[in-house]
Amino acid sequence: MFTTNSTATPTAIFTRRALARKRLLVALATGSVLFASDGGVAVAQEKPQKGSGELVIPDSKPGEADFDKAIQMRINVDSLDKLNEIVILVDSAIRKGLSPASDEAAKTFLASVLKQRVEFGIRDLQESRRSQARVSKAMGEFIEDLSRSIELDPTLIEAYIIKAAILRDRQEFGEARDVLSDGIKVMEPVLKSKPKSLEVREKLSKLYATRAAMQEETDDQVTDMEKSYEINPNDAEVLKRYLLLLQSQQKFDKVLQTLEKALASEPDNIEFIASKITILLQSGKVDDALAFSTKSIDAATDDEIKATLLRQRALIHTSKENAEAAKQDLDASLALIKNNVPTMLLRARLAVGTGDFEGGLKDVEAILEIDEDNADAILLRADIATDSDRYAEAIEDYKSLINRIQPGPLREELQLKLGLAYWRNNNHKQALRVIDQVTRANDGNWQAFRLRGEILLSQGEHGDAVSAYEKAIRMMPEEVNEDIRSSLLNNLSWLYATSPEDGVRDGERALELGLKACELTNYAQAHILSTLAAAYAEKGDFEKAIEFATKAVDLGKKEESEQLEQLEGELKSYQEKKPWREKQEAKPTTNKPAIPAPSGAGT
Image 1: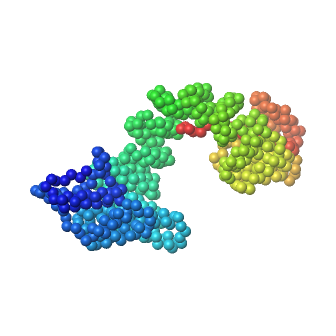
Image 2: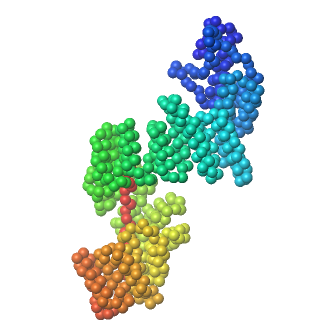
């Protein structure tokens, strides 16, 4: 309610109410209504002249009518054309003349309208096809509007941010940062004068965060995000971006300091707790992560939070190869929150990893009772079936998953699993057909060529197997682990050394690959030592062949190898100065597909 002075004339009261209504309309049009505690709307009012009991009503100015009309149009504006009309009306109002208070309001109002006109214009460009020349011209116009908007209202930070984004898209990165720096220079003094203003803090924090994303140097990015967080530490999005930036730069100590500060304010925040555990693990402080997890679990009073933390601690136990403790935590988590699918899935994977296929399958089936289409559970069921030699079941599950997935890396991975299952089920033709589908879609998939080589080798098609293996080796990434790398090198070396086909054998290449495989395994695997022996024999160096074949036999006896009889046969052949020849299933070390490991902390 607007109070009036009892001595005011009816005309004065009416005019004062009109002024207040106008201020309210401006506030509504610009989205800056201030709601009072009693539910009424508070707006600024003309101050009464000193020494007078009545409001002094300013004379009506020529531009007031245009300004009033612009205000009314703005409230429900829905098109670019209407915004253009509003800009013309406000410009006309300012040009014709307004009272000092209205003139100030009109400039702030116009700044907001110009910014909105740019937003409408950008949306229009996105929704319709325009020539490059038209887009370039429009962007220049947008920058002009935003520059004027900033001049009219220097505290309208959205104008700075949009202008900087346009400049960034035009590859004018320095100019974009300069625009944001100008906004920061404006808002810094405002924050000093209003240190408790949340609105000011949010604006300045947003400017720093936006500039951080446009910095070229990592240190400058970190400095800006740190400033953004210091100004507005309660902004969850700012904190998240700051932590991710620090984490990407492996500034783990700084991440932990920031998380400690955040946890001091919100000790029960599960995201902060989980993040701290993750960072401790990433920085190699596994025992610290375990201790902090235990402390957090003991302090938790909410069952859902405690269940989540128990699941996360189970992952830490898994990383320490303490399967029993991990299972206890997962069991305890499920006792608190029954039928939690992520926890059941982890327990199933843990069971399979320890050879308990029955226990893993029990959890998988329970998950599928809850969600029959759960892809993770179906995949694990298929992997369990493959590992249990139930290939027909695995094939059906892999096929059902492939049919649900668009072309891409995940689909290729499933196709390779399907191809492996077909091969182990003695359907070589179908296995090769599936693998060919992978290589046609992605001729850079080294694993497909590796599997193709192994299948062809097992069929005795040595020439084609060599070609596939060589492609796999050329494409194999550096980060591939030593077991897989040595296995591939070993198989190809064996082919070159022992194939009965004269056109396939190559003693030099066999020795080169065999030595690399032995180096990767520290000369400590019998079947790889026997391959090196075969390579020396192919080159006619039977002394070396006998040396390494003897070592292979000794290791085979020690390990009670299933291949011991063959290893002894190879040694005897070299003692008789005869190289080894083998047509089928020579030395393929095709391990069964690995059961997917549990995801990282925080799952």
